[in-house]
Length: 513
Image (cartoon, rainbow, N blue to C red; front, side, top):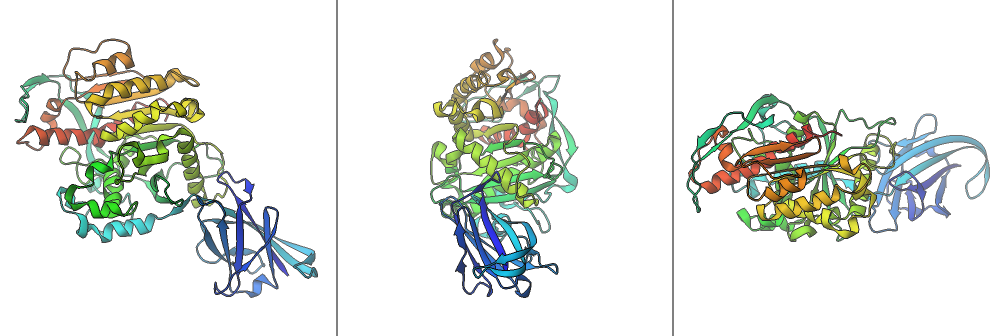
């Protein structure tokens, strides 16, 4: 008789209870329960090597964990191994040949004992299914300027390079040029007089994403967010000697503002895998459709590559049917956000063949946000229940704000300064805020740098741990290749460029990544 011993493990690899197991030796036609003995479950078969396959089903008791099945077979030595692709939730700890009694009848003889661990996971991998849905339904949902959404040829992954030769415009370390020019903006609803400003300083660079990408789906009914994009640099090791994982959590703009646009409502109802979720909150944030100075294009993966920093990008996919901070749910809770990142770290190490992550905690974390998404960042920083948590105080080390609505920037800066005044080595926490309005940034400059701002319409003031960048629409005009017939179009292009260009600057200045 050969015996299979089954045990459940949490995200840190600790053996726990709370899971029942069944098995099938007839190709999944019928399942029989394994026998429970504390946290161990087991079943016996006459000879594993004589079976075509053994299918094991794990069913967690807690609703937040996925049930899963794995198929196994015996190799020529009698050891149990995965049949086909390695089952994502299972890990064969080892097969041992023993002599003695085994099975319910306690039959004496030579037999094998195989120990299999089942991972209690809040995530399952939906990467390929989601990408196929993105490609398959594009014609149905693209009804605007984003129609050129895919690169030429046949993309094979979320990070298939989208730019010819990987070349694009990227901001220089100075951000602003050293000379000034008189700029006359296009007409708008309000008068915008000519200004003398230093133009933005950009150069050309050639970088392409080199990442392994995941779309991870959460199980529990009602949980938010239900899905996450995870982009892991291939050069960041997932091996037994890896250190704690550095993360950048990027909060997109509030998706609810797109809910009624471009007939998108129907697709936004299918949360989290409707086409507009996959495109608007994931694909369009990851990639450049063309050079960012030419069109609305965000390219977070390109900017991370250009910064030459090694970190894992995480984008929570919010629910557009909701409003305000509820869109990303648990991501504005320090306790739950830390648990989510630990679960992501655990999942990605398992995907690389390590059932137990080499470290139990995550590394340095940055929290970034764009546009109305900064409301969620401000809410996270302001919540009293977050302020005593070690993640808030110690693990979160950097905060980046990209073009928050001007009437909210002073409050966000105040919350960020309060966050940066607590915790271990709090004087080394990083705050970087970028926007367009010199007037709105007066209290921001005072709060972050402890002195009044310069009297310039455009300026960049930066230290090792603080950046205040005021980059009004006028200062972008000299470098933009397009012409603009009205102020609103110019303002929207510049607004998108804070997302499409300034992450690289924030990361490049990071003292810790």
